[in-house]
Length: 308
Image (cartoon, rainbow, N blue to C red; front, top):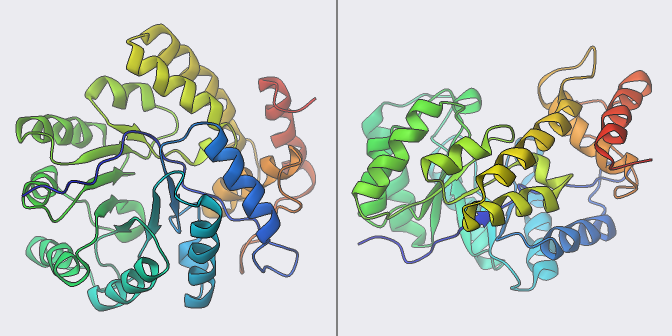
């Protein structure tokens, strides 16, 4: 029996503001969450890649979810990343975030000791049997080195194990088949794209929403795009996507950095330049962007009209 938890619309994976000592800046976090909710998002995803889950101690994870649940205050669903190397560690995180009031959990395939397809399916089934909460599969093979198959995902949706999927695989062919199989099975899954740049293509495929890190910078643009999609206004869907694709250049105009430092580092730097984050501090061992890289990001923001 499919899950009765569903979500449609824009679900930003929330970037976490840090003080200069790398502790959570609760005041900035509250302002940022309120800004996203006020923009009309459908939910918020905490402790994903943009939320620095891979850099977070258990104590920091719990603080982020505790504060998030308090600040959101039931205005939109809170999705909490329970991401770890193996099943029992994920169960531990799931117990914690549900105790703190999260509405759903988000789980990747196991990693480090890379399992086979049967083990991956058991991973999701065992977690669901343990926690019984709405669960989203997070398909991000670049980080966990395993690609979740559309067939397995839909099967788990039909069986009520999964409520949805956040697809950050970058595999548009697989995503198209996921949408087709999901429709053929009666739509048991909320299928969300993690793309920033081709959300319009995902909507054309039948996606139920998006989880774009860039929505931390411009939530209004992604919400306008979603509303246009719901109205069948494909010209606005495309034009908003073109503008957002230009904005996404903040992650590629930097020099001498890569990976997390260039991606989330650019998001934090943009939020700082826009006056929304007091710092662009990054977790250890990642250095905050500075100098010419900050100037390059500000140049993109100026071109888009987000700063003067």
